[in-house]
Image (cartoon, rainbow, N blue to C red; front, side, top):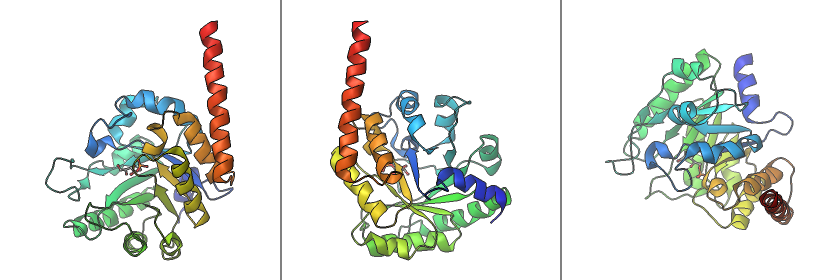
Length: 272
Ligand code: R5P
């Protein structure tokens, strides 16, 4: 692995502990204006300082993130489908490597759909993207997407993660599941987890804790952060588990403490 690629990867996963908190805001690429991400600029801005990296498409990067933002960019470069379309797995590469370089991406991300109708297309796109990325020292995150009819169990997720790693992905994103340690054991590159649908805060922190305990290298989390009524407190609590090894109870305490402090601050501001 060359120096540039290792350097970029070290911006995604902190070399001190090998862990990372990636803030995912790429949902609109097939879902449109997702709840609480209708105005991405407003959602992203207050959370940026607590994220280690930001995952999004070029359109949202260009229009909703200041160009002087000091945040490594994980650029989603696959898409071309929508929830209304024929088949979500029919993704193409939507952003060129030249464009990714111009946007100063630290990592490229694309979805693979193992077991779907377009499995071959997405896996061969992944291989090509890795070849392109490696030419310029840019790592690739493979997102193991799960179709409605596919079970999110360890057997299936281990299959998807291992295939992504075999094709050369530098980092893999998947879902937490029972026997998650089997997924991690079978994957020779770091595995991070998506948060999935919005859960009560404590459940999302529990998910984060279990994933880290079972070998995940971090999270690529979206809805469980910015769909919370307290997104700042939530990302801080997630960070505390990922980087500071806090338990769920301890991170919930930081969540409530930070929430109370913020509401006091807001009250004080109102009375001025
Ligand atoms: C899918 O829309 C994207 O790859 C998301 O970035 C990913 O699912 C993580 O977001 P969430 O935590 O909301 O599942």
